[in-house]
Length: 310
Image (cartoon, rainbow, N blue to C red; front, top):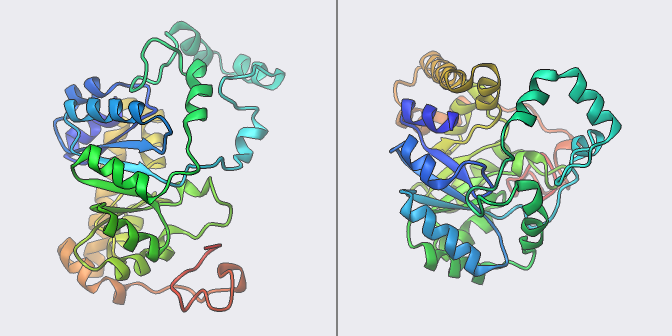
């Protein structure tokens, strides 16, 4: 709820995951600004139709389909920390719980979290196996067409890293390209989103909306994204840092910091407006020379790809 309150305070777009522990109706009461509902690729079409109907009723203006989670990434940090859903309480986890009594008390004294957009009666750890069984690796463009027909409103495809996929998505009916590599937690050595952004902008032209996420932690990162073709960015870590430090006020402060840093960067670049930044942007960005590690093959640079496998 802190992120929704901060979005309302700053007038920014708020995104709610279909696996969130806060429900659609509750979020609708916290912010009347623009809202996007994020949906995973699921097998059960009745479940999909149900959550989309709830999102429409809850005042969500757009839908974002995450397409880079049709298989499991190798989350090495989770393995190292024995993190799993449902949880398995290892010796290491119990030791950490003892070392952090305030967190442990908070966890034990509150009701179990639920996937509020799916079922508010069943704890999230109990629903995890069901959710995992719903992931659909066979999902294809025909399924995407069906989904767009069910939603019939502005829609983004989240997980775009290739220009040809972006073109296909526009032809299929998506209105927004969300350039994302899932925080680099899915396909190992996937390219950095900032590296593929210019080629995707070139592929879809100037009129298709583009959102970029991945590595956006400073106002200068936002500035670079806008200069290279994005219309907006998604942030994760900055708001989480603010949330951990100060709850709702901490998230609001994190947004304040990003805005001040962006204003300063634009001022020092001599760009008075976002439109001017986007127009002059490519000429303001200087990239270091690539190394063999940055490109998967000798022709990757010419194709507009850099930073990893394609």
